[in-house]
Amino acid sequence: MCDEKKNPIIATRQAPVGLVADLLMTAERELAAFYTAVVRRYGPGEAKRAAYDWIEEMETMDWPLDETIPNWRHVSIVTADCVASRVIEHPPNL
Image (cartoon, rainbow, N blue to C red):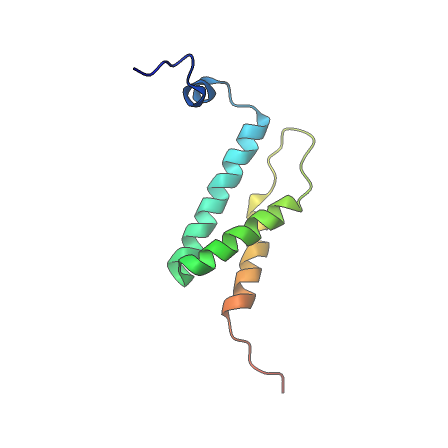
């Protein structure tokens, strides 16, 4: 049987969600939505590269000192620009 008191996974789920957990949960949702959109349009290879770009962009953000949630959509927009640069062929400059 599973001992809930000794199982760290179950104990974590029962613990109150703190600010850091909230931030990471909202970031995870935004990244998942972004990844899904990229995989549908450009396939899993580009989606994987886009996810790495998204995480790198997130790491450059200034994190709030109070309990406000960062603008994850900004991270997705910046990363979408990186994806577009990789997948769209630009006409030569004439």
